[in-house]
Length: 405
Image (tube, rainbow, N blue to C red; front, side):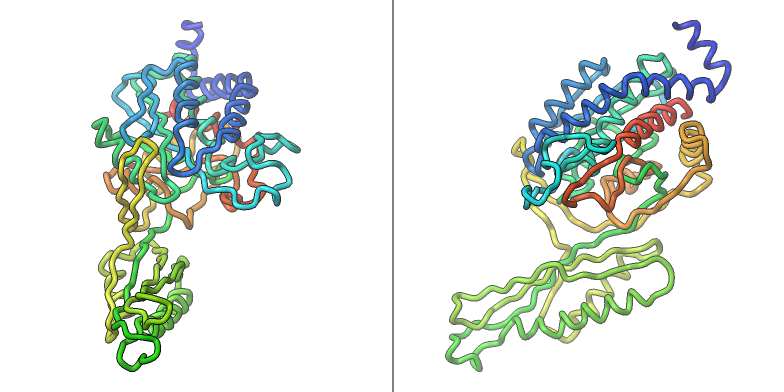
């Protein structure tokens, strides 16, 4: 076997790609079966222990050189010890199923119907976990890891706190890979980047008074009313700007009063702002200042506090600028080669509207791309499902990408 592999190295990428593709295809039943077990394991944000244990056991059974669960509860497997380091990341948590009776296929059955794996997380993003875990093991088993280290991370609490998981993981393990692939669903297209995100809380301030004498108080909700109109007007203006679409959405509102018989003393709204390339922190600050100008109000980044299943507190500051990897970057070049080998066609590209864990490596200066099975519009939806064919092809792509680097 070793002599055959050494001959393949001499024949170039085409021969190695064929070998990897065939090997993934040979073990596709185990690969897809693992994806099914992942879907069958409920893993809402903050309750990921069971699925982390499942992934850890699978990595160990596949011969990963090292498998670690960090203090936050993220699990990461390592294969190889070469100088070139590449990481594939998927989050293990999912949003909750609110109406299971509305699903055609039970949301935690992991059933395959008409060539599609059904269930919560099948797209977002348990199919990617299976594909990446098996890709790493396949490259190792075929002896194609010379000079490389592969990390496969499966991270927690992404749905609420994207990037905080990796921030902790990188710090605890003193890790900074050379290349990073976020395995979020892309329909198996190469994703060059994604929009930025800012989540902002605006609070208007009033003066409490009894409901029978409202003139003695200042109603914070009335103070907020004009601010809300400004938010709507700002979103309309943003939607009319040239170039990529940017948005501003009011996603929550609440008021505080001493009782239902009192004038509210404060009112808070929560905003979701999606940013495009070129927009800066200073621009967003100016936009928020204009929205509250002349009103008794203030704004802050809408900090989120959570606790991981290990008991570790998580503090998340949701402000991330948009990013994009240049078309001529070496990582893109290798991804293009891997795509052409696997799909025997010219690469297809996409750019995500949503935010991912990649916000952390991007800030660290680590080159990133996205690639994963499943249509991302199916994420969080009733009857979420992923084509089994895409799961297998994604694993082939990951394995060939490793071989090209």
